[in-house]
View 1 (cartoon, rainbow, N blue to C red):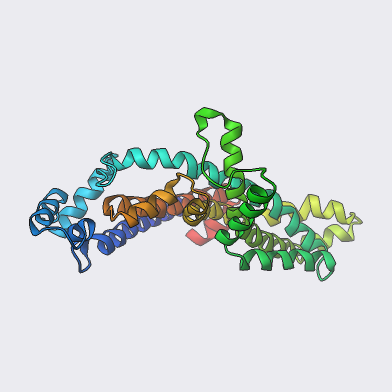
View 2 (view 1 turned 90 degrees about the horizontal axis):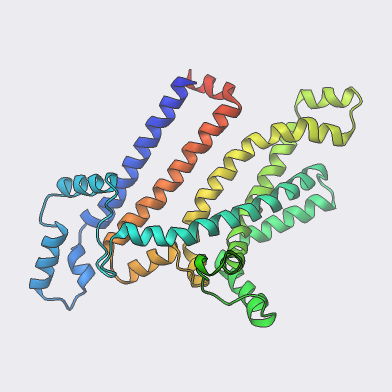
Amino acid sequence: MVSYLTHRAFNLVAALFAASVLVFVVLSVLPGDPAQLMLGVGATEEAVAALRTELGLDRSAAVRYLDWIGGLLRGDFGQSMTYGVPVAELVTERLAVTVPLALIAFVLAVLTALPLGVIAAVNRNRPGDYAVMGFSQIGLAIPNFWFGILLILVFAVQLRWFGAGGFSPWEDGWALALKSLLLPALALALSETAILARVVRSSVLDVYREDFVRTARAKGLSDRAVLTGHVLRNAFLPVATIMGLQFAFLIAGAVVVENVFYLPGLGRLLLQAIFQRDLIVVQNIILLLAALVVLVNFVVDMIYAAVDPRPHGKAAA
C-alpha cells in the first residue's frame, strides 16, 4: 500500500508539472507576442514595450516559468490586466458559483443514474433495459448548451417557473441562489447521467457473472437478496472511480453552460478573459482546472485503495 501511495503521489506531481509546462508554453512561449496580443494590433510600440517589461516578457522563458510557479505556490496568481484586481480574488469569487453548480449537477446525475443503471442491468434485453439505453444514447447525443436552451424555453419563457439566466447572490438567500442554479445543473448533468447509467449497468452485469453470485443463487437466495446483498456492494467499487472523475469534469465542463445561463462562474470568467485578451487570467484558470481534475483523480484513487486495497497492492508490486 505504501509503495502504491508513493507511486500515485509521484504521478500527481508529474501530472501537475506537465500541465503547468504545457499551459505556459502554449500561452507564453510559442511564436507570437503576448503583450501585442493583449493590447491589440492598434497599440503603439512604446505601449507594447512597456507592457512587455511589466509582464516580465523581456526575461528568459525559464525565469518567467519559475516566477509564475513560485507565485502560485505562495498563493499569488498575479494581477488581472482587465479588472485591475488580483486573479486569486476573481477566481475565489467565481468558484462560489462554479463549485455549487458542479455539486448540484453531480448529485442529480448520481441520484438518477444509479437506479437507472441497476434497472437496465436487472432487466437486461427487456423493455426496461432498452428504455434506459435509449435515454443514455439521447443524453450523450444532446449537447449541454442545446439542452440548456431547451430548458430556458420551457421553464423560463413558457412556464415562467425560473429566470432565464443570471445568479442570485448567496447573501440574498440560499433558496434563490439554488433556484438560479437548478436549470444549469440539469443541463450540465444530462451527459454525465447518461455515461454513469451505462457504467453502472455494465458493472452490475459483470458482477452477476461472478461465481459467488451463482453460489448465492444456488443457496436459494431471492433475486432481491442477491442484488442488494452481493451484487451492488461489489459493483459500486469501480463506479465510485467514475463518479469522482465526473465531478472533476463537471467543474471543467461548466464553461459553456455558465455562458448559456449568464452565470458569474469560473467558466464565464475564462471566456471573458479570452475575449478581453487577459492572458494572465486565462493561464491561471486553465492550470487551475487541470489541477482540479488531477487532484480529484488522485483523491478517488486513494479512496478506492482504502476501500479495496488488494488490487492496488498487486499493481504496486
